[in-house]
Every structure is written in C-alpha cells, then in structure tokens.
Length: 391
Image (cartoon, rainbow, N blue to C red):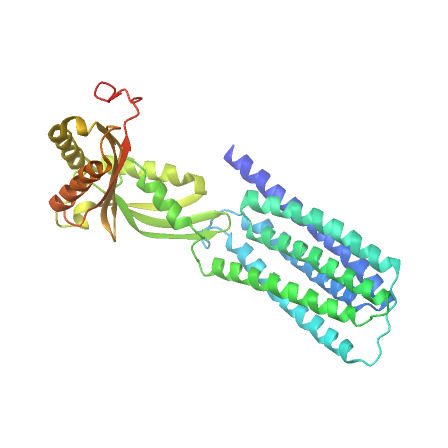
C-alpha cells in the first residue's frame, strides 16, 4: 500500500508539472506574437517572463521526476535536494530576466518619442494569460502543499507573479491607449520589481533548504510532542533538516537511568511513532539522566509525595490536584507544574499562600527545579474530590 501511495504521489506531481510546461509554452508563444505586432515592451516583457516560466516549468518537471527516487549507495538521504536546486535555478533565471526588462524599459523612457500600437489583441492575450495563470497556480499550490514539494511551490510562485505582472501591464496599455505611451515601459519596470521580489523570496527559501536550515517552528513542535511521551524527562541536541518532503534528523531523549535497555528501546519506538506525522526519519538516542546530571533529579513520584503531604497538612483547604507534569530541559533543568483544586470559598490571599508554599517546598528540596502552581476553584464535578468539595 505504501509503495502504491508513493507511485500515485509521483504520478500526480509529474502530471501537474507537465501541464504547467504546456501552459507556459502556449502563453509564451501568444505573448511573443502579440508583443512583436504591437511593439509593447510591457507585453514583450511578459513574453520573456512566460519564456522563463516555460524553462522553469521544464526544470520543475525534471526535478519532480527524479526527486522521489529512493535512497541509494551514493545518495543516502534520497534525491529530494534536486527540488531545492531546481528552485534556485528558477530564481536565478528570474533575476536575469529582470535585468533585461529594466534595461529595455530605461532605454524606452529615454526616447524622445515612443510609438505604441494598442489593440484588442494585446488586452486579449493578457486576459487569457491571467485565466491560465490563475488555474495553474491553484493546481500547483494544492499539489505543493499536499506533497511538500518546494519545486512545485516555486512553479506556483512563478504563475502567481505572472497574474500580478499581467494586471500591471494591462494598466499600462490602458494609459497608452489614451496617449500616455510612457506608461508602457513604466509598467514593465513595475513588472520587473514584482519579479525581483518573487525571485529573492524564492532564492532565500531554496538556499535555506540547500544549507539544511531547520524548517520554521519544527524544533518547537518536536520538543512539545516528544516531551509529552510518558517516560521522557527531556531532550536536547535536536537537529533536523528537510530533504524534499521528508524531515531527517536526530535527537537525544533523556530518560530515567534506572530503566532497562528493553524499556529504553520501547520508549524510543514510542517517540518515533509520535514523530511519524512529520514523514520523518529521525534517529533517537536514548540518554540516561545520570549522564547529564550528577545531582539528584526530581521525579514525578517525588512531586506526588509533596502534594499528598500538603493535602494531609492543609486538610479541606487543599481538595485535589490534576494536570501534573514534569519534564527535563537540557538548559533550564527540571520544569514542571500542577493545577491545585481549592475550595470555592477560600480567600484569594490564602489560596495564593498555599500555592506559593508548595512551589517553595519543591524548589527548596530540589534546587534548580522550576515549578509553576496554578489554582482553580472546586466545581464539584470531579468524582475523586466530590466527597470533600464544598457546596
């Protein structure tokens, strides 16, 4: 089933990339013919932009055709980086096109007289271009998001920028129709600015990928997910990178050093299951706490003993507790918290003093521990404390 899903994904990516190649070829020919007939630099710049899109779409088709190939003896992490490389080539091509458009636009602005023939064909080819570009950009964005493909995302960016640039050229032609021919090269300059912005953004994303920059927010999400696995005291040395649609990396998981090898292995399996949603290949290194800290570390059992003693000492003023958690942060040390359930009629200053005393007791017995106590009134809905809850 997994192999079938892989084949279907590859076919879908190739199909949408091929349709973009054909659409770009059609638009390039149409704009070039109309641009030469009318002499509009705006339309000719659009033709050059579409020609670039055709080359970029062809590169994208090539990239997605080989990026899903599995790892081999020479490429241990697969071929996903091909998509990053193809997207970088597209960005460089965009910049070259921009230089030509700027040069031609400045030359035309310097001309004493500029004659431009504005026809319905010029408007027509641009309207058709916008319709096709809109259709292709939506299809490419959908496929890029579904398959986490940077090459398809780059292609979608090309078609999206084409929509904006075509609209700008139409505005220039409208002004030219009413005698202000200089609006056409000005429109071409605006197109160049739009393309430059798009290409710089694309170049940054692709260079980040080629340099193995961690995806935005991925470290925080992994840390949150893994620390929620029972038995995980903390983690550190989190290193991740994206290769195509997959996340590769490694991390050190801190566990109780008294656990057996079998228990450590089972915990690593549970962590891998949690990370599976990222389509990941992450190596888990189990690290006993004793290797990190020589002093005693607080455990969840220690916390429970302190809370239960406080309940006995305070009687009805401390009804129950829930949402107890504890994790070990490699930099901050042990971090934990709990919700105390207190009687509804208890004065706020007394409730605050109870919470503060528990925090101080924990941190005094286990220096370096950061513990946060939250208080909430007993609502009488908890079956565990219903007998002692006030009305």
